[in-house]
Image (cartoon, rainbow, N blue to C red; front, side, top):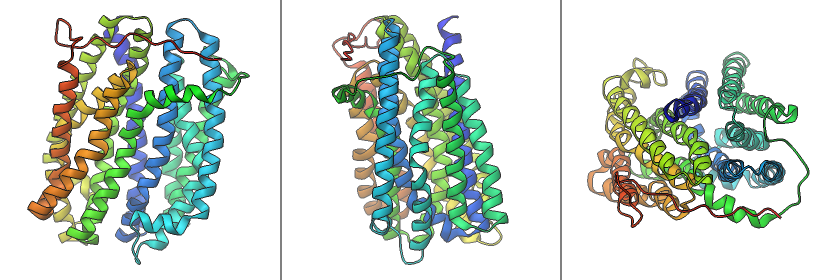
Length: 450
């Protein structure tokens, strides 16, 4: 298979998986908005940084372990790869159970810290208390999904995710619209869907269809320094969604008011679809880059980077144009224009401003993922932390102070633009730059599993 065909063979299932995840997340919001009301929709958004944090923890260990395993497979060390995979599964199970216990113990202070107000506190606690009970399945489901692709079965990824999505949508309708369980019903539906997804992927490894399998291992926590470093950029990319949501919620409450939080909730759902598209390209490319890097094939790494950047450019432009021309149709899925005309109009206007961030976000996600996959952890962390924490916090603070509501909605575009300059600088302005203007990855470091 040519490198171009292999590239699309891996990224298309990954993109589909991310789209399905994004769409059924959006469906959650639609059912809550239609079945409970705008206040409940805002409450779910207030709780989302917690969900993003759980997902980010899974990405930290899942992507880091996947990169490590892919490099080992590239070097022909299959048994070591299976031992790391098995150890990581056990560690994630223990950590997720501990996280669930802590969340249930400190549920009220966590809800208040996230920004729950007197009108949303009950909804936030209901959603958090229910969804946290499924943490182990949230975390293992994603970890298994990326490992399935690393194991050479990328087409299984969308099968598991699509099955989970259909289950979630059906149960959302049943629990929220028919049984009238409110936000608790939406959380239960999402949790059951994750249980199903985790079981589908686990069966692949139990049946031993690929290279990776569950096996005995010796616990060696020292390897998590490497795993955490390699997974950090993708972790921050996901955690940044939660961090950004938290920062936006706090700024909007002080600048615009509670209706602004509802507008941002709608925008955040749509933005998730765009960001997940870019993440799908990045994560679909990751095992190929890591495998080539393990073989010390710098030429293939650079080719894959060009292909990923090209795909991100096309998707970025399309997302921006759709955001400008069809934004009102997306907003109408959440807000009834006849019942809430002012809120609807304000949300459409806000979305048209926010959509400018789509032009740069793809390049930043791809750059961070490429750095991580080729073991340039420092560069990956710089890009991930910049767009996930530093630049957006600065842009929100400055632009909301200078231009109020308009500044809030344009701050994401400013943040991604600054990060784009940093990403390009790291890609092109390095001593190891080679002909063609793209960098050689650092030489492979040995993976030691005692």
